[in-house]
Length: 505
Image (tube, rainbow, N blue to C red; front, side, top):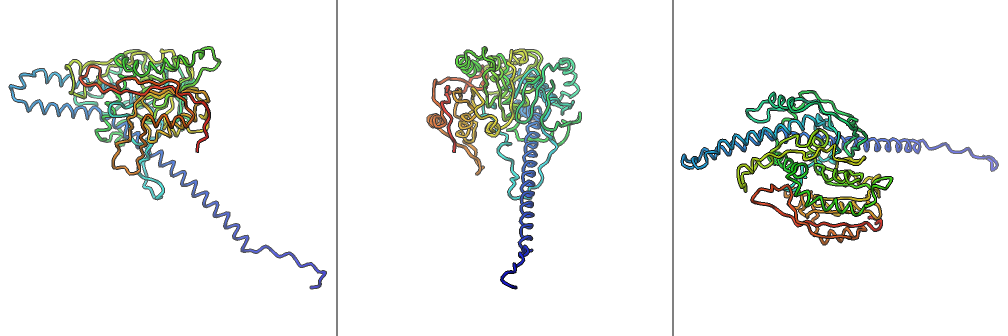
């Protein structure tokens, strides 16, 4: 080749092209594997949620049977008395019969509640064997059946935040009371419901738009024999049934005249503070927005809405959500139902009449209470739901009542509250620091950060909060007002204002 000749350009090395192609395929495989892992994780989480909800429904279904077992135990003890001792309490057999009637009334309420509940997820999902070691087979903490403390168990609207449910039957509630008898009572006592408003709901939020409840995810259809399915009628630990009894006591706190004293102790100071902090809310083009995490059975969130706020309650517990939906959406009159919340303990009773006394619920008709347009409920874990960017700086007020001690990490709760409040927004809190996971034993991965009140306030200061008002309020929680024992809390009540946005690390 002469000096003036130009050498031809070398052809691309085949092995380099092959490497590039191989690299592209490798990335595609990695992306596919990642997508598959995400899909499997999502499927697992949905199955875990379905498993948890099935267990909660089973707890409600097991209430009559578990209650009957208690009665049989009391009967066995009575039979062991000598004739002379039996003669001193001759009314005892009649009391046991009366207790059966009370359990039947509670079971009727539960039966109707479940009948009107539409599960937001497909409960037929089952957990498959976890082949991937990175996917945990054990239930994730967000699906554990935690409730409020021992004496507390703590979404909505109302006129018709309805759960449509096609099922017509559940198992026999207690010995001697048939499903047919219960259904006969229902037919006698209840006419078809009139759904006057429309609600849009998913597993995150529900808003009162005004028609039927529509799920943002796929709706699930169930047969009329759904509640008789063996996958639902499973036996559960008695601790789960105790949570059902706890819910019945919570109904008194939120929706009975007898709970007015506790509501005056806990809710009234909050409502008065909101009223004074937002005096011009009725004149504003858009009412101030208030979030109520840990809304329980929804009464506080409803009362805030009736004050003229856009109010949203947030609740994690399906135990609570099933019951609150029924009360808020399906009751048509004040005093429509009668329950017997104090029958499950023979201790500290002044009289049998006190223990067996009926409680009429609800004390008001929720749909006629005067709520503000925009009243809604959000189901899900507080931090997971409200850490989304759409909530950042969106709320004028956050109200927490007996809530912040439900956290695994109370610092995370405070950080989230700061994040979602507008600059100048207020955080109103009332409650103790009875950390729910403080005494969790046998779970090495269980987390519980237990701060003193002083430390809680210091953390709040870090996230931009300044205390404007602070006091101590004495109150009970789901306490039988006629019992000989009354647990009391000296709760921290404060108003904090978010002065500036804080950059988090």
